[in-house]
Length: 199
Image (tube, rainbow, N blue to C red):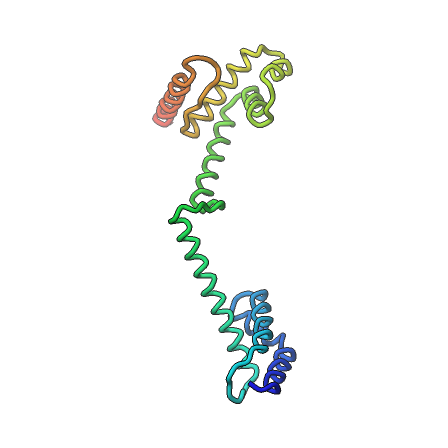
């Protein structure tokens, strides 16, 4: 391509930039992508290429820009295939997928239902211990109850939440606590079954 042809194409790109960008935006579905492709087209005109006489600079520029966009799409598709290969090979994707997001939402809803079942004091205690990380003795003093009663209320609150989420709750409140939590979860499940039958 002669220097005069390159100069003419560059002048056409600059002179018809808005029109070219509008056409490419419709084709590619993105104004930003259209701008990037036109910039790459301008840079591409620097490279020597064998070409005959250009009849329509606008058509020629649109063809170059569209081809650049196609190559970009192919490159992106290969990158997606590589990420699938990474998953097969055991590389971890940090972002949750749609299934994990749905499961997380369902767990949050189940936890909210469990919190709705708790008495206000049990709700206050579980939030103070598990969210704020406060000491049982401080909570007991604030509520004007014994630490033993705080432990008991916390245990019931944790078991209720564990049952609603279908999880075993591991207790640190003494021997046999793990068995007690499984028994409590079974009791709640049985109670729910009876409630369904009576409704």
